Image (cartoon, rainbow, N blue to C red; front, side, top):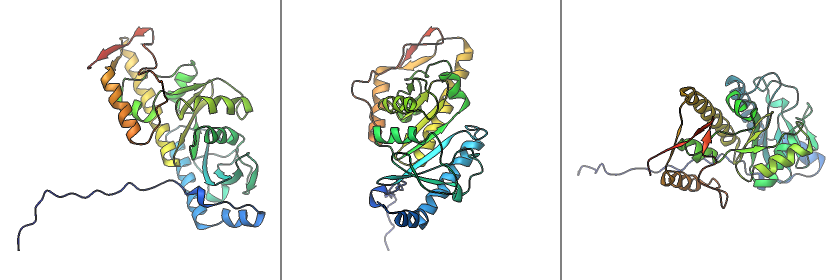
Length: 274
């Protein structure tokens, strides 16, 4: 029996975490109620609760702050209820609303900010949104700024050029419109004087972006303590980041400059590499 060569490998496929919402279109009250209680939706409710616990554990939300949504049908999405700690939600707390924000099922009233989630979904086609108040991100957006791009590979690849939406009252049509427009630049949107909303192909991705954003903001704030200019990578490095971003299916707006700023904290940013 000949010895098997060791130069082989396997290539597992990535799991598909996107809920197949295009396959569902319940319309009548009876159809919606049956759909709302089916095993597939029960599993998604549990996932939303898990994401809520992770947001709360990481201190991205406090009190009853934050909200989560996932599109589950052509005209329906699940969302967290209003006035509840995201760290202690149960599946039976989750609500069902249509793509106009009208509640269709659930025992608790839906979040008042769901129309902002819907606006982002309609604007750029994401399937899940998360709104939270991660402290290091808020340290930037309270000042009406976003962190510089071109410094860290993970930030440019997963966050792109973080967008800034002008201030509006939470849950207002003005806020929804501002977020919908800002999301065309990035599905990581800083909302002035408010918080962050992220959009993803699935709820796990929307959560990853929230973690990525707060971790990056924390690193930039810490680096700023040196009271010295930070360095951006060279233009070829940024082009490499953008190629990777496109390769994993994340958008790069047409005409976007390589860098979102040339200064930070009163210093001109340096360059390293090509």
